[in-house]
Image (tube, rainbow, N blue to C red):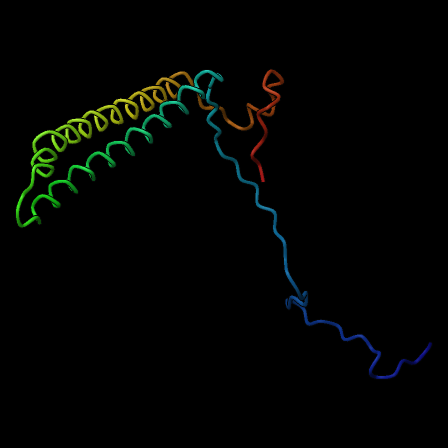
Length: 147
């Protein structure tokens, strides 16, 4: 038998002691439920349009409201009101205030329409278990969510 020097002899680990070093990977399998939405392209366009309209109407409402407040503050800080400030305060400021209320109402309408469209889509959709999606060849786009 060959005799090895003491530095090359292998040390046997004690029983019950884990001698592995480094990172350990443990696979954990999880499953989750997938909700499939039956969304047509026209529905997506409608939702996008309502979202755009809501943004535009809220921006216009903010502009009109800021203009009306600016007119009020400008006329209030004048020492002597002139004809232009009277015209702005009597005719233009109420016009911008009415337009702000109108644009606010239109933005609320567009956001409610978008919300009702999403509710309709949610009612027409169904929950699918990932194991059912794996075994169903009729839905090739539904993937398993096991990790």
